[in-house]
Every structure is written in C-alpha cells, then in structure tokens.
Length: 105
Image (cartoon, rainbow, N blue to C red):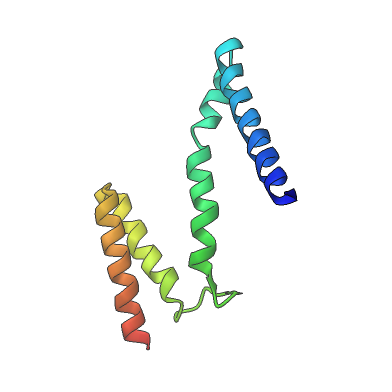
C-alpha cells in the first residue's frame, strides 16, 4: 500500500508542477529573454544525455584514440552539421560505431 501511495503522490505532484507552468504561460506575459532561453532547453537536455556516452568508456573518462564511441560521435556530428538529416545522422553514426568496434577488436 505504501508503494502505491508514493506512486500516486509522485504522479500527482509531477502533474501539478507541469500543469502549473502551462497554466501560468496562459495567464502571465513571459519576457522575450525567457522565451528565447527556453528554446535551448531541448538541446541542453539532449547534450547532457549524449555527451557522457561519448566520453566515458567502461565508467572511466576516455578521450583516447581507442574510444570508438567518441570517434563515431564525431563522424555523426560532421554528418549532422553538413547533412541536416536526422535519419542519415543516426545511420552513419551507428555504422561508424560498428565499423570502429570491428576495427579495434
């Protein structure tokens, strides 16, 4: 019973926090500086999730020549920069990762 209480309360609190922000955006005027800053939140969140995977190998920070994730990420970054196509970036990045793992193993 305690577990269900925690789950329900956690869900209710999460809902209320998110709903309050949506409700407030309709009621108050948001400064342009805040609106412009909010555009960068998805990129910052994605970077916070992705970059540790590039630079940590077996739980240790690694920017060496044998870190295949780092090099595959660099290949994917170049493809993303020039190609501007998400599916192409994913395909080339995963292909590069598998190629580098095959080469270095």
